[in-house]
Image (tube, rainbow, N blue to C red):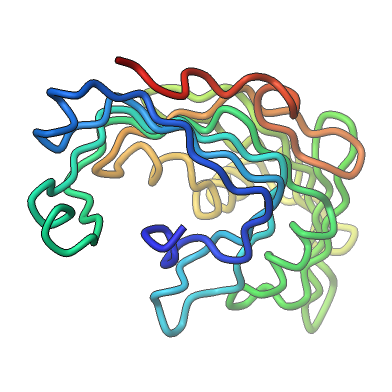
Length: 214
């Protein structure tokens, strides 16, 4: 939890299951680490001007190919991470209320409202004139991106914006391409938008995987 303090706070039910081998561990290698939590705040806490964090629930993240500095750990007790091959988000839930609070805490989005429904999300951004409204779906990713943001339509008041402008707006808000360019590979289990929540992957209570390998 201390190592993750720059990105995770207020974790409830936090635990880590390790898959390790003695010889590899002495060399600073961990085959996999499975992180679970009933609830946690995630964000960029180290940045002074970072936006609001996001509350997530029923979390399970599998990290593979973890490399750390074994000598520093032995001499100082401090865990220094050097590299990670893959971060796989296997399970995660975001509620409509938590998502709304997160979006309103981002720069320029104080007037946003979101409603999660089966298959998609309806979003409205309050502007000085007419509101900007859209319906968004998440589709399977392509080209290394974990998902694609699909905007069905965007309306400025009663005016329906043309498709080329909708696509331009969607590209600017879609985090998928940026996720595919991270120095660490990130994978995401299938995403479902249902009434009041976004669900990633399996259900809570499923086994996390091996606790130790010898």
